[in-house]
Length: 88
Image (cartoon, rainbow, N blue to C red; front, side):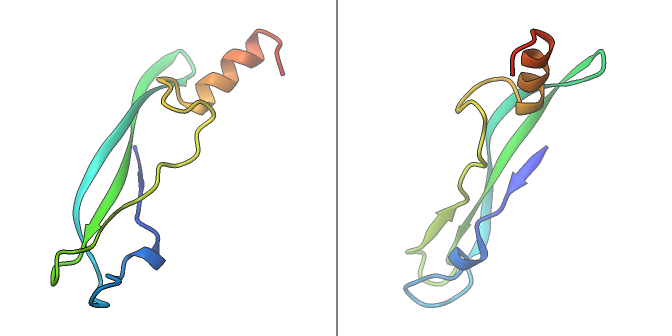
């Protein structure tokens, strides 16, 4: 499982300058991955933060880069599949 945090530069409320607190973690993707002769499902989660004082600011971390957007296969499995078929 991987979790992407909100970038430090975006953890401060622009309205009242208070540090935003984590208010949740959202699972945005589950993708198939492979170990030799073993498949597993890994989750990708992104952090959400909000200002506890003024409640006007909420920020969710961006999704990490992926070889195939919204695909169901993780990057390593995709690369191994292409390698076995002799494609670059």
